[in-house]
Amino acid sequence: MSIINLTIFPAIVLLSILSTCIMIFFARRFDIFMDKPNQRSSHSIVVPRCGGIPLVLLFILSILFFIGFKNIEVIGFLLGGLFIALIGLFDDIVNLKGKYKILGMVLASLIPILFGLKLNYLGLIMNNQFVLGVLSLIWIYGMINAFNFMDGIDGLIGGVSVIFSFFMLLLAVISGNSLAIMISLVLMAVCAGFLLLNFNPASIFLGDIGSMFLGYSFALLSIMIVNQSNNYISIYPFFLILAPIIYDSMVTFIRRGFEGKNVIKAHREHLYQRLIINGYSHRRVSIIYYVLSLFFGLAAVFYIKITLLPKIVLVLFCLFILVGFSGLVRVLEKNKNA
Image (tube, rainbow, N blue to C red):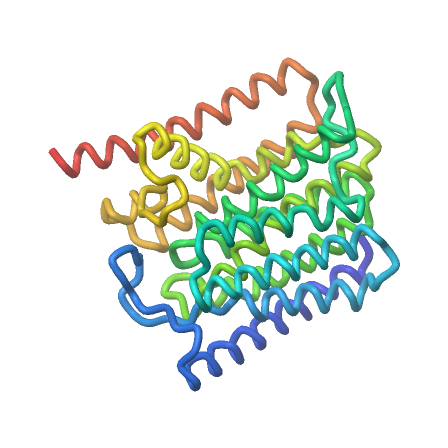
């Protein structure tokens, strides 16, 4: 990674802070995008919910400035990202019905695939390109949903996104993927600037525009690194990097499904929300997820360096950590209700 790349980071962080401060000013001045507390809220004061707007714009403009239109996959990445950002923006403004929001997420997931940005290799015996296209669609759509579900308290998604970006940057460096290095660096910088104003007590929230865009971006970034690493890095380490978000979303989704509840209806049953209900502060819960993210990011780096049997042991240990975490939340709930 060059000196030029390293100097880009503080510049974009400063621009992210400045643009987010400007967004806060306009939101409060004109009383727009204001998130008023309701029965599902984890906050008690009115806070602007538009932090994703400067984050998305700064990311796209930075990529266009440093990379331009030279790469067809980058164009697909940015077009899909712009589309999902618009879906998120409409949802923030008019609260889109579930079916329209789902359709928008599917279409956004398809755009980069149509531009050739899909998994080309899975590391299994069969690598049918149509199947890989379908799996890529599921991966992108799933990450959009997961980040959208998990954006509910001060600093959680903003903070873990900085950590996720850092470890994706490491994997991009290991793979020698200069394009992914630049995208990871820009993503980490815009998230770091936003986090300074989103950490508890938050001055601004991401909104759906920001959370959905971040989920989309991490899904696509992981695909780019896998495809250009000459099969040295598979998609599986990225499951580890993003594990805290994936696990919380999937466990909650599956549990609500088994209980016969509407799985797409808004609720407060995610692990992080249950910790808040049990008396943990926003700051404490976010830090717990930061620690988990650091651990799983390190696990992902080790994963690509070890052989098959240690990989199996590592994955089982990581699963044990996640199951233990959800078990701890359950114990806290039982103790509170006892």
